[in-house]
Image (cartoon, rainbow, N blue to C red; front, side, top):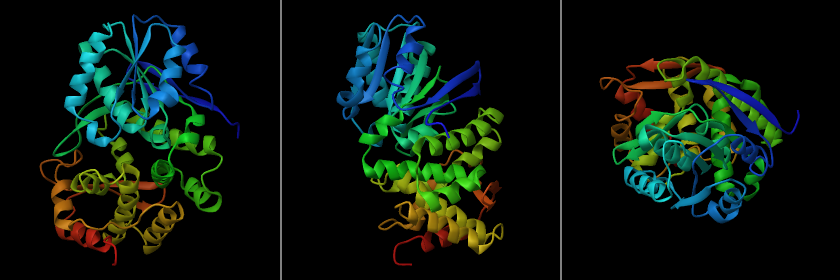
Length: 354
């Protein structure tokens, strides 16, 4: 496969390009922005990425300035968004300005939410720098911030003008963040590309452009069918009901991708317990998770507390438990009315030492 790819995703107001290529921040993104007219360009990133990529990107763009926020999920809040509104105003931004999200999933969600709501919406470009953001968070237009009660409970749908996934940025990605991204690649394979799971088990995550592009294609196919998550798009949350509960109850001590890994094992076990899948499914998923260096168990959290956190999951309706499960790799399904005792039993089985 070619070491670069350009795809497009059909959004609310037309299609937007997704460029997967080393060096995209140096040429493709500046060329894209330079061909359009914006009153001001605000590049929003975190303290870690600003010296690595933010300052150089601002230097390549006209009328651009840099805004930095602290690193981490704990800062993906309404109070941070409020501070960013002030930064945009101080930088002279108006309704003809552009916001560029330069970073991982937290920055993409946060900056995208700010772009969706500042002056009732300004133009927005995603520039993901983590594997997780490249294959999942930057695609499909879901943006938002967290509340104390749970993740992404305040948000919007905001399609970007474009997505530039510069795979060269992955060279500076900490190993733990690399593994977290692999959890989302595995999720994509389990949902709609079973050979990708086989590839990860046999060959590992190389070449990176190939696994990014394959995961992007999975998400593209789903979000184009269901932009506003009223149907099939819910399947992209495979493992995430477990994961979001682990993140919240741990006070976000757990990384998203590591929590997703445990969540994928949990979803597979619940699928087997409900008679939807053969026991080999849970074995396959757990083997893949461990092979990618990800956790398959959790410790120090109470199953009852995790269940209580799940009750704030956005997929649940009227208090009815809803989970994305699997019949087999490539065949996800959404199941309503899963009893508490079945979920607790699975959570108990996921504790370290069991």
